[in-house]
Image (cartoon, rainbow, N blue to C red; front, side, top):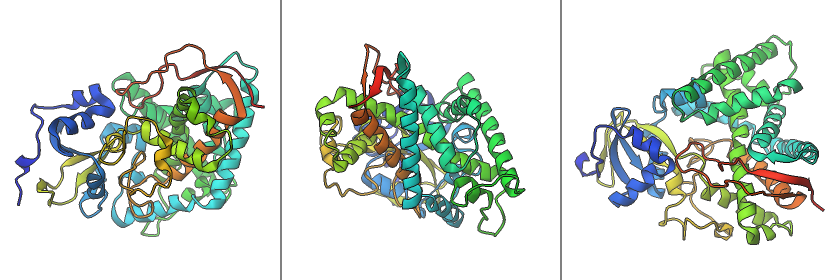
Length: 419
């Protein structure tokens, strides 16, 4: 059996600050310097293993080798995921809960999502035509909050849309924050959970009628593997796990706008309405630009892989960004090239902007289909259905800040409907 000392080791007592300083590049930088897809470090005072690439992804998503319960840092649970959410479950409990999420992803429900998204883009465009300028990141978050709430069956008052947009955005914007930013995210989590818990109570008390096919209704009446109704707190967390990720698509939409602006030759190919190229364009945006930097899990039991020992209870991080930029998987990975997805039949472990593996049995994000559908509609509006000017601004983006967005949040001027 191989000795764990054979794993390349980063010297030092703790590298948590280095992870914060280097952000998306932390794991990838060391994979390159060690010339290894696996290395050992210390994070939050404990030994941790970092890994990346297709083979590492396959191992990371093996439920016999890794578990999620207890892996996510407490501050991420307090802001991003919420307590007892599907991301923290394992085994049969996870599969049972995940099936409910996947039941929302039927062709009929996804078509309803597209229709709602188009309606909200039309409404937003009518408003933007009357404005001197639009801060795309902020205005798209409002648009997506409306989409998320309508699709999930969550009633929202018109005069509270901006309030709840800000609160939902804080859940993912504060996930890697420290100090005041972290507390902003925790307060937002408390406010949003209380809001959704009240709605679930109203559904269960038959004081609020909700469509049977919506997330609010399904989670309000969902029973766990023991046949018991979910407690109201957990049901609310899962409804938020529908709302929050939809608002977070604002990050990808900002990068769509950036790609449309920076790559006019690729954008021209979208004008012919070719749905295949549009999907290739979207997938390349998801691969190329930063979204989630890594995923976390805990070693479930001792095992050996590629001559390396993994000890039970060891925190392990999978390099999502680095795997999507791995030259062993992608030709010229640091070049935006939608054509790379023409006829692409890659593994679910090599293209992992929102996690890898199987949707139904594993921890690949159930909302990935929602992301793609909303991005399709948004790309069509940004590339084909409206005209705008992009004034001088700072369109650069940080590889340290998590999440990363263009510094100017993409300012648009003279927005009008396309001819």
